Length: 373
Figure 1 (spheres, rainbow, N blue to C red):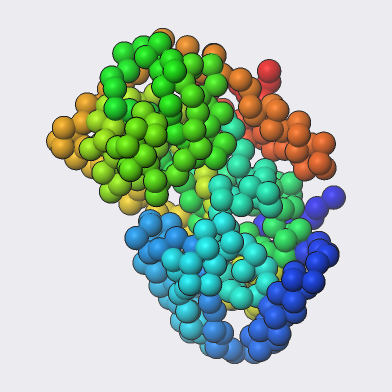
Figure 2 (figure 1 turned 90 degrees about the vertical axis):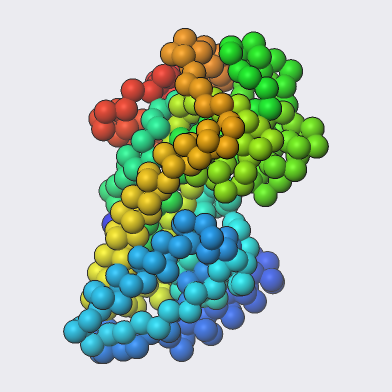
């Protein structure tokens, strides 16, 4: 049994890993941490490195500078404790998907642990990407995942196995859209078309007749422009700054769903040694960052769709019949994903049921009950 709340630090120690390179990295991290380990009850100044693979132009990185750090520092006023933050973004010490390893090794005390880009280590955290058509409410999705980390030991198991602690500030991704260089009046229009999607979202194209192609935001524009594929599954808050409407001007809102991509995590050994006042300040900073992030995101999504329409894009709401046809025709990738992880000793089926139950209880009306089929 895995005991302890996600933010108490009372999680099991990191699993032992073999390999000379890994041991060298952990030895370096341990040496770095020796100089920063606090003594409980004594006023301290802590030097804390925060790492993110993405550059600060991304909202989930900006929330650290604009909300998390200022809130932590404000919370520590009068406590006798202070923190000097060193912000290392854009791959300065860890690339996208490498943040967890950097935090585990002690190269950074805090980082953006991105489940979407580190699925091998944070597998069950990707549950939302295997359950489309559940909800377009990004705040509810993020809140649900945050609460599951707080109350469900199965959710924090992956962090404990990798020597880190879940801090919070879940990164929600707004409702995914279909953007194409051709009009979509029915699902028949997707037959034979090459559509790019990120990670597990490529499973969403099963049953549509489209040819799924693995892609990412950095290449979408040029690959649509050069005919590598005919469209993408993407979210509005990224489509506008990426100018995807220039090459894929047909935007169809299918309600594929909002998603969860990652959160802030801390080095377990470092976190365990912090006094309660500092832990509470980190919690407050994460909560404030979560609120700021989703307020800013929700405001921007409407602006993004409006601006793309003003720039010449055609924005269309898919009919309920089209949405139902897409959902009903999909393979149940969630069931396959969960069964495969269950066989590895990871409780994905339990997580799948817990997530779906929580979303239904919050008022979501999934087009398919992925956990009950």
